Image (cartoon, rainbow, N blue to C red; front, side, top):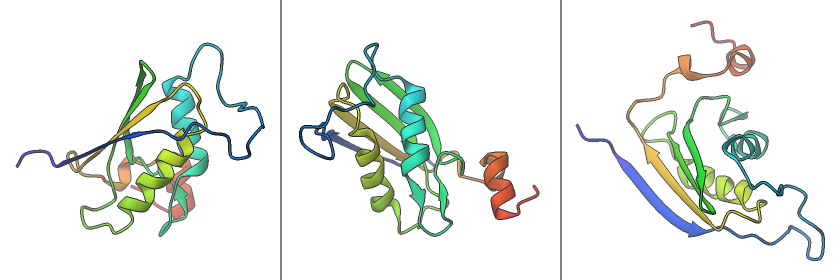
Length: 130
């Protein structure tokens, strides 16, 4: 079966949360993959499990190049109803970076998510002993 992919392209909102305040998230060297991943880790949570989607192992790839962030991710199951909410929250987390003008989100279901993809912290939090 072919990979299922949902591709959305949007221009990221680059305004600060409060007008007139400097955006301290943007670095002079430009935003990198680790910075984007950390922003998602700190701001985007699975509402059903209460854990961030990075530690849950839902983020497969982050690439930042030419003022564009490409993020490949999955959900815990193909029928998960929180996909749109997670996508909105990812865009919001990335909007703090002034130098990212475009965000491409790629939702895939291959490989399928499995609890073994979680970080040790997430496993401990959920009591999973794979």
